[in-house]
Length: 300
Image (cartoon, rainbow, N blue to C red; front, side, top):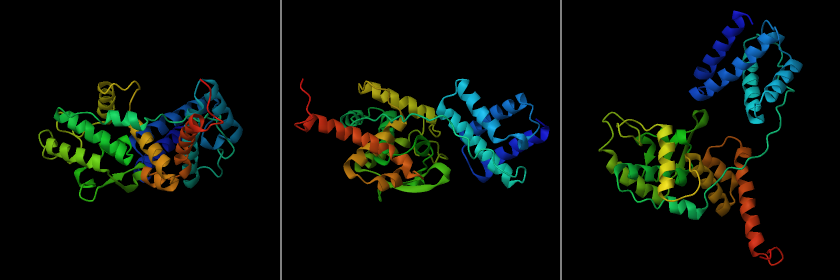
């Protein structure tokens, strides 16, 4: 492809970072997907972006899948291409979108794993013997109490916590702000941690959760500490931060049946994203039915 075609990729990258304010991780993923498209276009001897049409794009998607890319990854790749061509349409480079009738292979539904209430209770029985233990317990309690994403938790600053009002203000995906309640156990653990925090945090650090160096704790460190806490408590499964969010949503939905409310608390833009937890809830109800209904109980 021509240097002008490459220039539009660079302009699109700036558009993602400055206008749409996407995270560096998302921008990097878009760049990788579009580099794959550009390489394929070079192999097809296409000179610029106007020459890519719907049949060629279908061929690109099929080749990606045949090359070992999972259906979900093909979907993500096509999503990047759609966004790029909408940008080109806005810039007047193309007059129509070649992406309209191109679909990725179907993705099988994969339900998220969750901890049941007994397992979660066991994990949160962690006795904080050290300052770092107090921090880890506060993080786990807040994850489970408020359903935060990992990025939301590590990005928390002190002014976003209102312990008196029992709320936390988080900056979610798309830089959308939401306020969610914080439970009493999490409040208790946070109060304990904030007392201990003074011994670690640098004076200029506003982060709620800091590491040994006094700086904001990173996402990878949180993942490692959650896995370590689960091993200490004798849980047999791999525990990661998002497992707390899945468990929060599932347990809340089982009790309340309020799908809209759970959607708001999770910060999901589309209720379809939240509906995955209704499948988990049905599985729970099905197990209860099998165990309790006289016509359903299986003979040992």
